[in-house]
Image 1 (cartoon, rainbow, N blue to C red):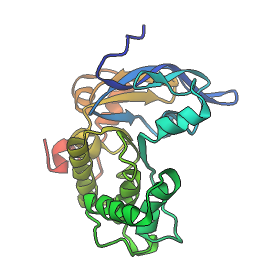
Image 2: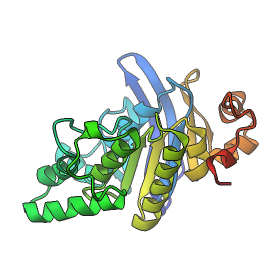
Image 3: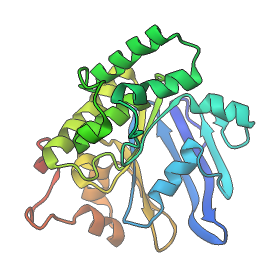
Image 4: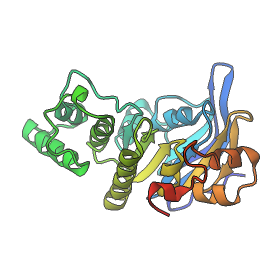
Length: 267
C-alpha cells in the first residue's frame, strides 16, 4: 500500500505503469525520493531504467499511475503548467547531448535564451558561472568535438544547471568514462548536491558510482517488469537476498575479482 507523501519527499511515484503500446516496460511502481538525496534507478540492461526516467522528466506519459513533484501531479497538469514544473529540472543525458554546431558556451546559453527574458550580458555572465561550477571556466569557446568524453559530460552538466534546477536527472553519467574521470564526475555530483541543495536522480549500472554517491534507490527487474528491491546500493549489496539483486551487486570486473566500493577510492 502506498504511503502518504512525507514532508521531505521531493518526488513520488504511485502505481506507475509504463508501456509502449501493448508492451509493458514496468508496472506497479511505488517509490519516493527525499529532498537532497541521490537516488539511483538500478537494474540490468533492458529493465526500463531510462524509460522510468523519461516519464519523470516529462518525455513519456505513463500508461497508469501518478508522478508527484512537490506534491503536485505532474501528468494531470496542463501543458503550460508542466512546462513550469519542468523548469525545476536539469537533465544530463548519457551522451551529453550537446549541439555539435555550437560552442560550449552557446550550448549552455541555449536554455537561458529560450526560457528566460535575460539580456545577453546577463546570460553571458551566467554561462561563465555555470561553466566554472563544473570546472570548465576556460572552455566556453571550444566546440564539442574538441572535448574529451568527461569534458562533454561536464559541459552537458553545466547546461543542465543553467536554470538553477532543484532536481537533477542523470542518465548513465559515468558511461564510457575511465575510472579516474568517473570518480571526478561522482565527486562533482556530490559537490553540487551539497552546495546547491539539489535532489539527484540517476540511472546507472556502474557499481563504483552507485556505491560511492547514492544514498537510496530502486532496483528494477526486466523479467517481472516491476521493482524487486528498494534501498541504498550498499544496503542492497550487503543485505538483499533476492538472487537477481545479489548477482547484479556482486558482479566483478574481470581484473578486479574482489570488487567493492573501495575500488573507487572511498568506503
